[in-house]
Structure formats: C-alpha cells, structure tokens
Amino acid sequence: MPDALDLLAARRSVPANALAEPAPSREELDRMLTVAARVPDHGKLAPWRFIVIEGEARATLGQRLAEVMKAVGPDMPAAKIEQQATAFSQSALVVAVVSRAAPHVKIPEWEQVLSAGAVCMNLSIAANALGYGAQWITGWAAYEKRALEVLGLEQGERLAGFIHIGTPTERWPDRPRPALEDIVTRWSA
Picture 1 (tube, rainbow, N blue to C red):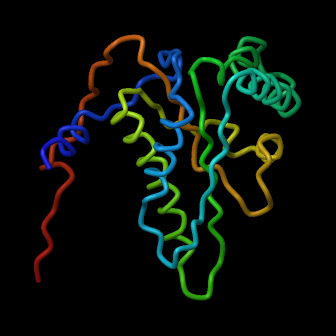
Picture 2: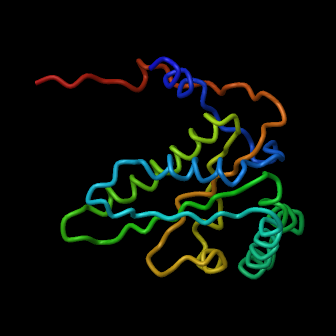
C-alpha cells in the first residue's frame, strides 16, 4: 500500500495557529473520529472518548481556561493569560481526546493508556489523509485539575491531548527526524 506509506512518511504537525478555516465538515469529522477509534483496544474497552470543540465554543473554552490559569497562577503575566484565552480559536476545530484508562481485572491500565495515544495519532493521520493539518498538544491544561473540570472530565479521566485541526495556511517543512542507526538496536541471544 504505497499510498498509505507515503501518507505516513509525509505526516507532520502543523502549528495550531496555522490551521485556518475551513474546518472539516460534520461528515469529514465523523469519518476522522471513526478512523481514530480503530486502534488496538485489548478487551474492547474503548478506554477513551472525544470532546469536540468547534465554533464559538472554542473562544468560550479558551476564555474559561484563561480564568483558571489566572486563578492558579495569580502572578502569571497578562500576555500568557491572553495567549490562553485565544489558544482554541487559533485553529478551525479542536478535539480533546480523553483517556478513561482504569484498573481492570484482565487488561493492564498501561495498554489502555497506549490505546488513547494511538487514538490521537490516528486522528492526526486521518486529518492529514483528508487534506487537513493537525497538531497534537497537551499543555498545562492537560495536567491542571480545575482545567479538566472545565472540560467536563470525570474522576479518573485524563487528557491525552488536544488535537487541533484545520486547513494549513502554508506548507510547513519537516523537522529533522532521528537516524535509524541512533534509535534501532537488534536483540540477539
């Protein structure tokens, strides 16, 4: 499947602030989310879920998180708080991927966490396949309890990442990738 390999080889992140309108249509987004959910999932637990942040909700979420940021860090520079207020309006669409990994009698929690990471990657690749750009970001909000409450995460859930999606405003160059000789070893007895 050379087309699939070419897509994977060309995949790269596009900065969220360079992912303009138009956003994917409802049908395109549903297709992306369907592809994102086709990941290894030991036990068929679906240990993840999606929160779609679109339209005016992007600005509202950015503003609410800026308020949390200010409350958490009252000495935070005003420019940083303003940057947070507009962070979700930069891209045309944002999908929060929530990990619901939990102790299970048979399925290791770590496998569930990895499955959520695979969901993020599949969503990014699906966006690329449909001609959109994407960037997977966590940031401070992924680790701040009050920010996660604003997003509506439940006890025990964690944010695997925000996937920003939109139409790239320009062609972004690839970053340097590691040489195989630096990252591959061969095990032998």
